[in-house]
Length: 161
Image (tube, rainbow, N blue to C red; front, side, top):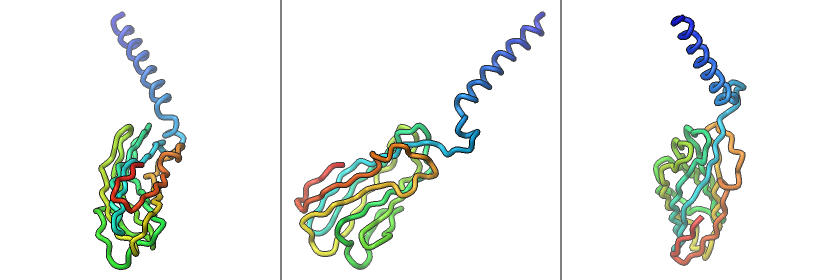
């Protein structure tokens, strides 16, 4: 009697674990990539032809992102010559820089990216576009919050996004 009750308990718990596994991992079983929701928040300051950007990536989940890349593109070209860029950032064009965000846990912020670039001339204003280039293989079904366009005036004031 005692042995059959133990087996029955094991069967019930085993069935519950199998059912939970089926509910949690159908996307993995089908070979689909994880889902995440990337977003970027921060500020930009333009003063005398230099733009300073503070950017915090965030993943609203539900899955983790092992790494991703964010692009910053300005309406004015970057100054010629070398730019002093933050670690993990690289100039990829006449007007753009890409930065690695690092791992982004679900429902958490990533490491803040601090970036300063010099623009050609001294524009009175620029628009800065921020968007995801690569999401670490995750699917982002809400692309509205990882694409931003910010108007930044040469006032020395911080423009939040």
